[in-house]
Length: 155
Image 1 (spheres, rainbow, N blue to C red):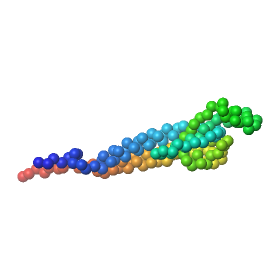
Image 2: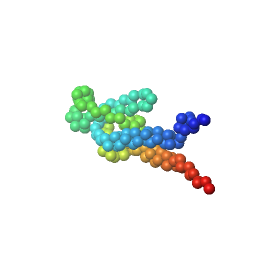
Image 3: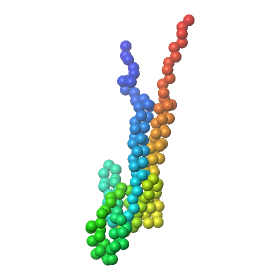
Image 4: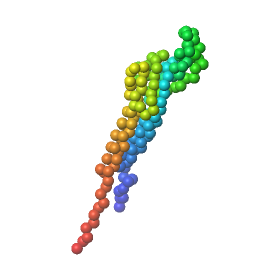
């Protein structure tokens, strides 16, 4: 007798829903971490790391350091000793910002402000995809719950 069951080689919709749920929850946690951060400063440098997924970085210094400079040589000296903060941003914010522009983001705000321009934070997109993934995995799991077999009594 051949026994059929969970080892039969079939991938059930419940397994796929569980995998999507795990990815969606991790995406939602990343979105929360991205949305809760706050930063403010003047852009002094930009860089990016190419790889499987590109990472875009902006280096910020507090605005007080810029106001203390009186000349270009003074700026170079201040930039060399000013505490820099590396902030990960989306490609759109990275491309839209220039050196010596003010950039800011408030905690739990979906927007990053570069001077007067407003850009959507990447965490907002992650939150949206995470919520869609959680909802679809719960819907799929509930839709494909196997029904118990009813055994009718024999006469």
